[in-house]
Image 1: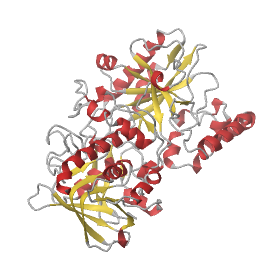
Image 2 (image 1 turned 180 degrees about the horizontal axis):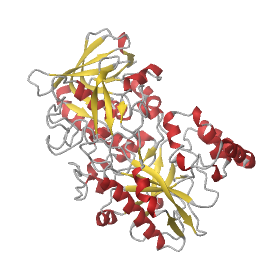
Image 3 (image 1 turned 180 degrees about the vertical axis):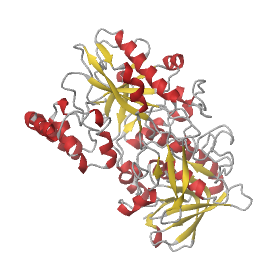
Image 4 (image 1 turned 60 degrees about the vertical axis):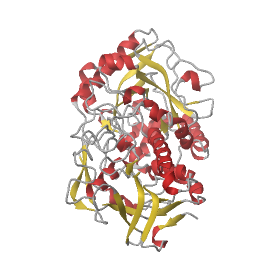
Length: 550
């Protein structure tokens, strides 16, 4: 069996051709891609098969509001945060890779096609079906998202998001890695330091702590940090306590920290038009949902950051929605994970309704609660491919509008170290997430432009309070699980941390595999692109290392 507990391995110093740090979506994808390659690969995972409550203290740090607590949206276990992942799969767009003169520090050193060619394989890892994100190409019986709305040449009205099972990588790929002849997984093995070789031009070894607290050493030809957009810069900065940090001579490690910012504002009112609001099944059996986004030409003309809009369900906490289901979920929120509770209370201060009002909804609308219970059991609990979440339309027939925006990369938005250390002696992190005025103004222009596009349709309109628009944009919150940009990919060491192959400029045998390398974020959830980049990196390394292995 090639999955072992670290303290059961007797070697004082382990050796491998490739060492991967972190067994989440990226790390497990890499390990699976290396399976059968003939390369000796070791995958280090700080946790075990199950999450231990004591592990969360390792992630405890300080944050600047409104960023979520540093312990949220991160898990130390085999499979990482895919254990609580919602499953949304969305690709980046070609414009996301291009230099846009109205977005500072935009542009990737690789092309969209360099990544997109790996999306089909990434979709297989994610169990999300075909690499097609259009209504016409995915649905057996295509129909407009809103009957009569064609986007007016400004909006793409026929885009979808696909949803994974959601796939827990730890469960899904455990058997494959257990049977591997060349990949060894070490559990309860937390990497705490990286060791530069004499002369400084490459990484020689890393230090990890096993479950018994013993410090061990691992040497490898090639190292890959697949431990996420917060832990990767943390480890690089902490591994050079007398200097600026590994790979950081240009002071880029930890900077350009981005998430996506989102909020609910306004409402779409259809005039008797048919609306595709609920989840649908694609021809290949995958749940999907509709979204709106601006065309590339509209983004450039109106100087917009890439933004997605979705028709949303009403605020759970506002009892005026009249739904027994939503009231029941809201009243049960204390039993949910903190990450899921956050979803239930956007702008909760705007809500109307007391506990009594929610209980009244549950009594009056009880038949719908029974139907929901049936669907929940058969579509969420018992089904392998789970209904992603609950969608209940508003009682008045309108649809609150959710938006999700990319951010301009900001050097001042960053991950740094504090003066406090965790139990293993690794300095804790401070997360200073920022969004700039330019992005707020872009989001406001986006709402105005979408309203103008919908005004050209006789079947729907977008309503919102212009006087409150800018204030609401400023109250937008970061998507806490999207940790992007902290070891950004660039054309040179003066502009970033890793090159187009995800190797550190200063330590070319050390790679980063996570959304930490994204120079810009687009509007898309990062998981699909993380896996695609992991596949791309494995392909590159298998070719580069094969002669040495032979």
